[in-house]
Image 1 (cartoon, rainbow, N blue to C red):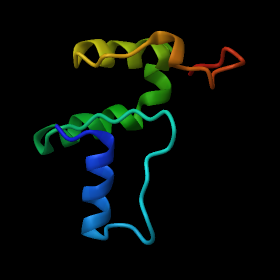
Image 2 (cartoon, helix red, strand yellow):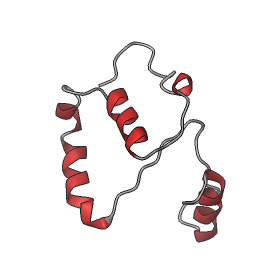
Image 3 (cartoon, rainbow, N blue to C red):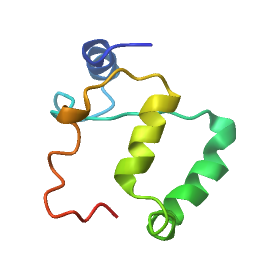
Image 4 (tube, helix red, strand yellow):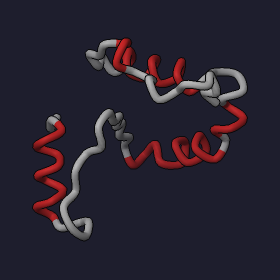
Amino acid sequence: MLDGKKRRDFINSKNWVAGKYNWQEGYGFFSHSHSALDKVTRYALNQKEHHKEKTFRDEYLEMLNRCDVIYKEEYLFDWILDGNEG
């Protein structure tokens, strides 16, 4: 797996975007295999309904844990100030 700098350099070497590509501060990235495309598309189309049962925050933390991503919870979600996580 490539770290953020290597991914940025790879994307820039391919000229996939106009100008220079760079990660925003505080990002998350998960990829899926092509065979999961239909499932991921259905999920994205039904996300509003899905988040009535599970908040985005809870789901995101589940993904981090399921993928063994090392993180510090105190650095997550400082942009959610009003409690509206839907």
